[in-house]
Length: 469
Ligand code: SF4
Ligand code: SF4
Image (cartoon, rainbow, N blue to C red; front, side, top):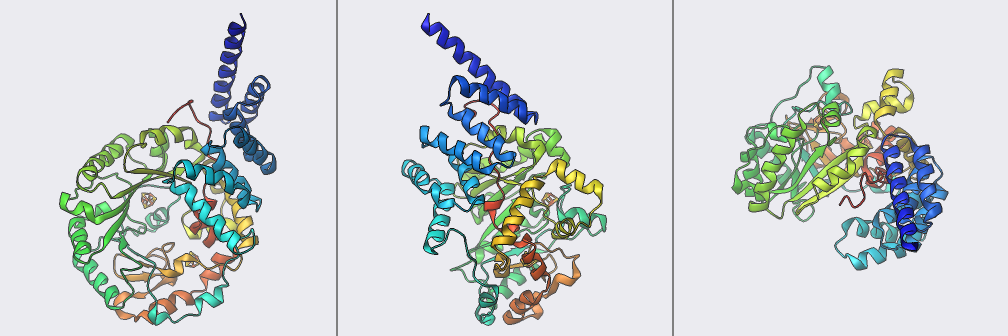
């Protein structure tokens, strides 16, 4: 009889829990919260319900209470990874990040390969090493005042196709399309000359840069000479980093696959509605194209790092776990981050209040705008004189023009700094550092926001199903 009562109460809790998740999936947070509270009345140590409640309360802006709930989860199950990550976010926002350290160390002891957790530990080491709980960035002037003639690029982006077949609303490509500036394709011979030039200038130094990113705003697989470009890189002992939307099936010869060091697949949804809304293409065809290259890579280049750049929008949060389960297989890293206003001009206009009402409304329906505002506020207080990582990187468009940074396009003529063949190394770095846009970008928090991935992941959404992975 006791067992029967217990079973009945467990199944009631399960039902309430599922109901809570369903409400949350529909955006009915208050009702979801009541369900999880009822589960906890019957089962106060239910870690999933505590974690989910914490996520909702975090979303309401009550970070302190959310952190207490995540901590309570970890006092029951110290190996609960999602709760650890959620607590990490909450503590970071309240300047108490080092509190999480013992929990992270436990996770790493159990799984030493866990890169994500190791990265957070590195971040904490840095904070403690500096004797402060805040990351104090090095002063801009000190860092920028170095001998630029000897300087190497930390990474290099060369646009091999200015064209893109995606239709993403929040990408600078959408501004370029409106201006009827569709871009062009680089020839393999121009690509080779650019590479040679950068090697001559000692800007590429293989001890710091062993790969070249073949994209800025375009789709690299639209370049019909992609195989020739990969061969040129291989001849120069360099690897390629490719980021693709996979709308077109890439025809990469097997012998060139090992030259791809990193392959990123940008994905904006796991249903046709979500994916079509952003990328404007067929999800099933895109997945088929990805599978085609994935199978070939597993055979010919299993060491290629494959990332799924899962773009989190408010409307695709319910698809998060399905997508994560689908890509949970050898050689694939699922890396979510919130979709950004990637076009720096739109971002600046947004911050200055220069955008029309209807656009703001669209942003708040699609994007994590409140989370972004919160992050920008934090950044402007804590990192107001920070060094932009893009100062150490080079971005070259498909015609060989140096751009201020990857945030710029060929169309932004004030920030197209000159032809790479006409500049010395010193001129390249000096022109980059002379651009006054950077002051505005840094003081508004935008530069830091774009380059610091720690600010781009609110707590993961609730799992749609239990044991989804
Ligand atoms: S986000 Fe990527 S796929 Fe979408 S339009 Fe921009 S470059 Fe193309
Ligand atoms: S500060 Fe902004 S504009 Fe300047 S290089 Fe960095 S991201 Fe680009």
